[in-house]
Amino acid sequence: MNKPILPDFLNNITVVLTRTSHPANIGSAARAMKTMGLNRLILVAPNLMQTPMTPQPAVFDHTNPTAFVLPEESFTLASGACDVLENALIFASLDEALADTTLSCALTSRRRELTAPLHTPREIMPLLIDAARTGQKIALVFGNETFGLSIEEVQSCNRLITINGNPDYFSLNLAQAVQVICYELFSHVDISMAYLKQQPNLATHQQTSSMVEHLRQVMDAAGFFNRRNEERLMRRMAAMFDRAQLSTEDIDVLRGFYNTVNQQILKKQN
Image (cartoon, rainbow, N blue to C red; front, side, top):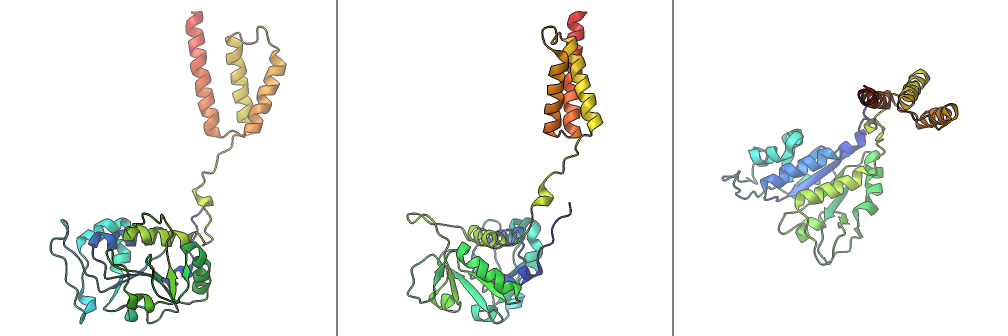
């Protein structure tokens, strides 16, 4: 079975990472996105920290955002999603990044004095999917790893999303948060998993009958019918294998086993 094609409306949904500090998180977020069918990424004023893999990260220039270059560490962590990073747009401010969006969702886990309603990912995803289907531009906005989104950044968005978790300990890595949100979104997309199911190569009636006859011969050689009704027993065995709907691979395994058993019988007889 052919793989299903991702719906075009997913191209109306963008992940926005603001002031991200760890190069690896950008790459891991890209990987999380692509795994769930999203390819549009925006970076807002990246503020990269030094890491063992990136000892000298590029410094973001607010006057020339497009000159910013992601380090190799980001591409390494992106794995097969390097194209998401290569096509990422870079802006100096969140307002610029959200200019053409109609629904912008701020991801926040802190209490704030804001009037916008707070949603869980599962609650809001049907709304976002429906909006994207009609051509509206959707943004999922994630803040800095340490401080999250600022009040001003949250106020630039018109929806709030919180990932529900343990009230006593809630500490999701940025890329993990992106994965959770993207998974919840994709779970509302009608993509069949039938292509993942192995299509059985069902055995024919002749193959099954021959296998049952092979079994009868082995059972007979082993003396199994000495005190049993051979005809009645083999009818039951044939009916059982018919109900099982064996594959050709099943038949091959069983007949291989019968051959081994038969060889052992012959050795004992000799």
